[in-house]
Length: 147
Image (tube, rainbow, N blue to C red; front, side):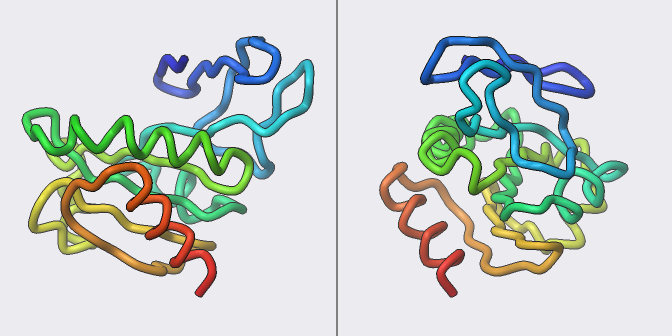
């Protein structure tokens, strides 16, 4: 379970059920305040805070360039959130609405949505367009992180 505000999201720990507030950007890995298990980190970024939220992250980030009017984007979102949950503590998922972030769309040459980019310490590892099921996305992310 996840809810989003401007500066933070609230995530329920899958281990103990405790609700935890996660900032959009931080220097560490988010952990449950009660049981200390890693939490899935899913947040949003835009043109003005991408560097802070994505490029300064200490763990690899999957950036999901999406649009609210895009059917495949709505289909891939739960699959990406599942990958983020599976890799809690090792991966951050950041969603970028292309309609609200034209500079980022141009910078990453987004021609179709969804476009997914894996970034580690500010460096692009891989990029792909189109929706896919969670197992395919998990394999794609694992391959990118292993390279």
